[in-house]
Image (cartoon, one colour):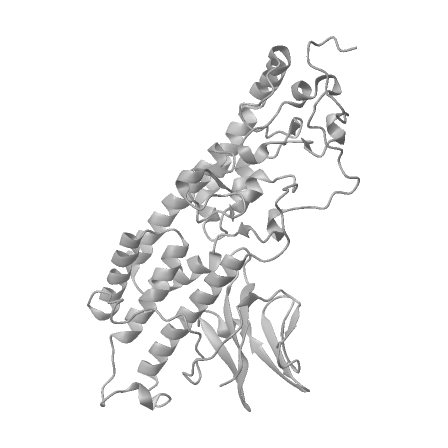
Length: 415
């Protein structure tokens, strides 16, 4: 017989919270989760904030215990904030709505009507492997930094701008428990749970909310919008590289000169589109994009950016020939892995385990390429003594580890 005064649950399964799929056995630091989720390039800019937020969490442990005891007495089911302590569990039934339930109240006398038996071996549904997890575009930040290195003023100005943005997004993420009022660009976004427009709701930083890897909207796969961004930036980089090559290596591109003269304005204007794409991917508004790109072209050419005269071209291009080709979507090569050309299986590219060397094999022939010799050159078409190969690579230092390289590969049909 129920003596609590609560209505009887009809045909409801019941049990201890520890046996429920919604139970979160221990809290996870919001300060740490948001820090780990931040774009690796800008993570050092929020380190001091992370230290301060972690200290605030540690200092507030006693308040959490008091709140839990008070919730039991007052039968208050919801925490004021998500518990972040290993000693404090909670119910994550409505965690994506920013609500965290007090287990001892919601499941008093094991009468919770939302009890769902936990699977014996639940499948991890982590954001890192989900197709809806839109990671921040780290390569856009790296390309932006490399591009503006030609201009001290822009390097310092943009450095300050994005440091402030990184700190603001981090602060909002921790304070909002992974739910932000506007879209972040230096933190990942869940495209399945975030709105298409800011006024429609909160933007969800999946790895900060889904700490238990139990999201019911999880779907395995790579994020398609991230792949499109990679492809577009790679194409713009290719056109900028080709424009500079045509200007500086006329003997290789005799058709680049029209009427005996070269268009010296074209390369900096084309490269400005690379910078513009990077800025947009990092959340800059169009006023900032236009002013930054004009300042960039001013430094290189002494005039404003002219995107109408030199429009962006997202058509892939082969560097060595200047011929337009159709490459595959770029993909990140993993250390120690080998990849075969989809149409020419006799051609493969392997990245060494320490990422310092690429080994290209065509049939029985092999050619090693040193990663450091390819670093910082944008997209490079690989060439050997017998000719060019239908593969381009993009190599940069990996930001998270010293002396390792981040390598991207794109296949295409040789023209």
